[in-house]
Length: 222
Ligand code: ADP
Ligand code: MG
Image 1 (cartoon, helix red, strand yellow):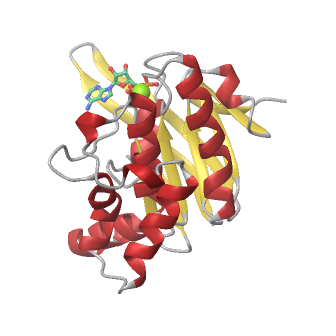
Image 2 (tube, rainbow, N blue to C red):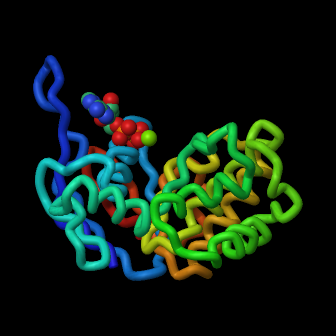
Image 3 (cartoon, rainbow, N blue to C red):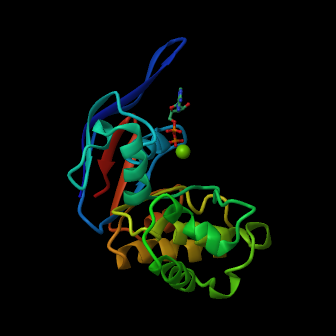
């Protein structure tokens, strides 16, 4: 489903080129979940941003559902990203002026799916335990609840791939546990693959495949 072949990425700096990813490869089957760990500044967000098509690799190839997203036009890429990839960030990135259910429906605005959308949004919010918060606004929710809305939003269009960058990084332990549990279960129920970047051994421990990103290289833990 996802194939990453030998991608490299670097940034120019005053003291020369900073290599962040060096020939990183990774294959993910449909519906598979993995965790990526690594020290701060090791390139985890850069890798996730490339897989999310928000940044372009300098070298190598990425295919998602047999499509090379970097060969698409800007317009096709925006549509591809919205439909195929769900994002959960460390900060929830909810729109403050929209209600919970409106936030979950946001991805459908650019990609109309018909009258089933509202039903699916309600069902997802039920699954993340927020059935009685549909009309709340983000400011009226706890940090953990906001992340659960973000998970529902990421899944609304049944993406092939969900990317979560330190999704429990800003949460206390009990909120982090409930978000971790949902993240390790919901995408799988929906047959979405999931890549979670985390500092938390507790969260990573929920996944059977864990990788370390260190010295620009991705290695599987044995
Ligand atoms: P992580 O998510 O593992 O903490 P990042 O992927 O955010 O690491 O960053 C990896 C390295 O690349 C860091 O040293 C960071 O300073 C550098 N970096 C990230 N983005 C840029 C950029 N746009 N320009 C220059 N350097 C960058
Ligand atoms: Mg990061």
